Image 1: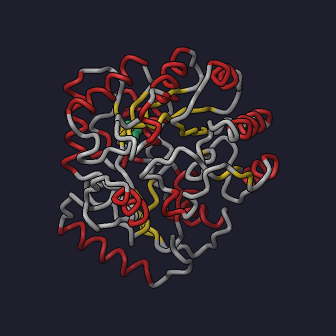
Image 2: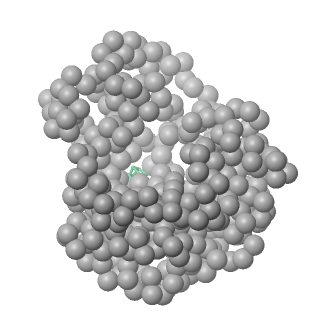
Image 3: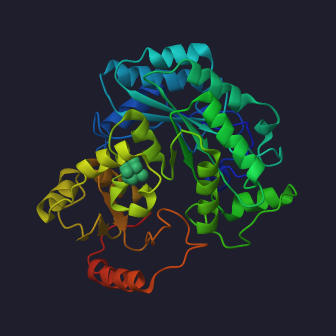
Length: 374
Ligand code: SF4
């Protein structure tokens, strides 16, 4: 399991994960150990748990990392696991890589190419050549069971939200014929903002640092409008899991169908899949799920329309429950307000009724808090 990356993207999350200075990927755990840790984890479920390989730590297609990426994929495949595996990269993908991916029999791989259209090398040094575009073209020329997604991120006001840049990204998606487009904003945190400002880059959002990604309503509307105006046939998604599951023709594993404002741009066939799959857990089922995962039998929860509110479970436990139930499991202290699902609240107007309901829910749940939260 390697960590470290030389690509130097100015907005990289490794600034606030504390390892941005590590440029050469270092192996922290051997690949067999990493696979054993993953598959032996109490929350891991063969065929069900979605996996992201080496995300937040490195780029899985860097030369020193790629052998490990393929070793993990091949080992999961050898074990007959059909889990969705997400590989997020902006680096070189070759015809040989595609042949190796296509030779897998069981794991369902999605290649997500981070491509933002940003041309400023202070923000994205890799932008000066066409590495990512060439990789997208190579991948789409040879993919069948491997799904290819253009991961349009980060979209940041003043960096890449002008009509020409947006049209350029959409054109790359269309001409390559990717399976889906997923868009999102950027993590506005002090560490990466300081790095960018020190490089002379204008950073929006002032000092309003947030734990979730920034993508104000106005920018969301701008992206959707640009996609509509382009007339391209590649579908656009607001959530990674939605783009991935659409490409693999299965319902969203994160149960976003309960969030109607995310689904208004989704293709009809995929909406039908998600609608048919949607089922709220019963109280008995929700009590049983954390107990099965050894989280105890007294997890506080409140089943609401389209999601379940919990408190102080922590992100890892919530996600394990969410993937098991294919239903949104949320932390009451990190509310998802209308239309701002999973985003920082900058640029959204919370509704008074929703505020009130959350505050009541919090009171009902917090008295039972047992775990440290994420
Ligand atoms: S219908 Fe909604 S939840 Fe399902 S994939 Fe589409 S956007 Fe996501």
